[in-house]
Length: 191
Image (cartoon, rainbow, N blue to C red):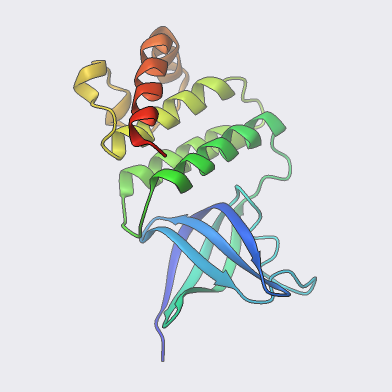
């Protein structure tokens, strides 16, 4: 009998597999980046279909089998149906970056909180700072993965995961320096 693991996850993307299956890319609180197979999810009667839409947040049940992870259930936490399209596109760019940079399964609490808080900030109804939230989120991702040094930028943005107005104003004040560090870090990854 396989053990079932329950965890919070952000849906970073997916690809179709077979006639009705889909391989879903999740960033989970407990396991890091996971690619899990969701059987028959493309059928209209699938209960997990709406919980695992791209760029949404869900509580998932995972089973680790011989051939990798399988989704055993999912319950929607925060969807993207009513979000601003600009916010969804910003989170889509972040999801693509995460998929490129994170190689394997490893729990990283700070990184999950950075993504989760950014997702929450993007999905708020009256969010006008999409570009700044995206900038801060990417900088924090690169910091968490070791591509940017907190001492080099001399900022407190990396000591927490919040996206409040105070933190966004601090990021706007040092926008040029943040962009320069991000671009240099991404070019050095060669990905």
